[in-house]
Image 1 (cartoon, rainbow, N blue to C red):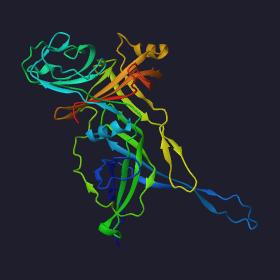
Image 2 (cartoon, rainbow, N blue to C red; image 1 turned 45 degrees about the horizontal axis):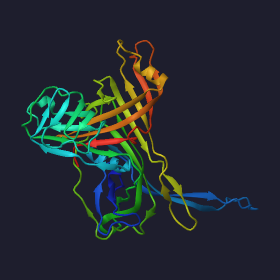
Image 3 (cartoon, rainbow, N blue to C red; image 1 turned 180 degrees about the vertical axis):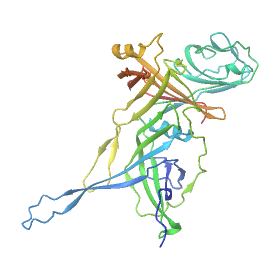
Image 4 (spheres, one colour; image 1 turned 45 degrees about the vertical axis):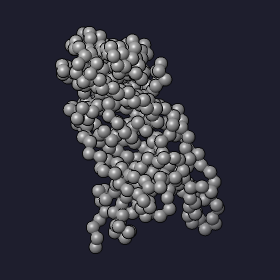
Length: 389
């Protein structure tokens, strides 16, 4: 007797499509790093209401089919590559490496080059290469004087004249409305199949929801929910398909890889304890008689989550007052992938919708909150910044 199937015998692979309606001719698949979940075909039934004089059970009639993948994971650099597509992002890449950039008391200047072209107030930037290591960190642009002169939060920790080879990067991905499509393949060990693998391949897959959780300890975790419109016939591999090298980027620790949580463009200095992120495209399903599966249209994007904060007694009620008055808050989570690569996920404008403070004996009176995002003045609901591609 053969051994029993285990969860390790499943794997999920994604290949971005060039266009809607077909898998690429020679698709290259990336293995999705997961903790559980797979793409699957779901069939639902309704029971006939026909009157049966013998009282026996009525016939079950197929009602619908749907194709979906609920994928859980531990957060890595791979996660944010997919999350950029999950928010249907518009990307603007801005990177300059020059020896003419200097740091002054308010920000950064360049009398010769134009390193800040394409950047704007509100953008987070990644600075490296200065001789004074305290200058090599991430900043938020508070004033954009020109493509040669910006002011930042925080202000530079030191003044350094131009001379060192400095890199300023701000690859900005903002929530948009252009749907990226994926082929989603579930592979299952099956020794009765050619190559001992069963390939179930869906296409025109779309991200519906994405989430991740920055906890107080442990590993950063998250999930994606994907919906697909079509399923290929059979269980053989796709002709011409290949696999890319397995992603080996570091799993993120909530202690070691979360650099800081920014509140309103300022380092919260560990007063913000944890944060959650839940984004949805609210895909709207559309079915047609005689057709398997569904097609989807974008709904209104929504973004919400949880936030917890410490309350020092010199200003213990700032979050309560924000909640009561409806003051907007900007939340940004900065993460270090190692090797000089960083990602910042920003919710630029949100309202605190729930607020509680523990008040029992032997309880730390932290603020436990929920937030709901809204479009900011730049037209953004969510922004992902990074200095890697």
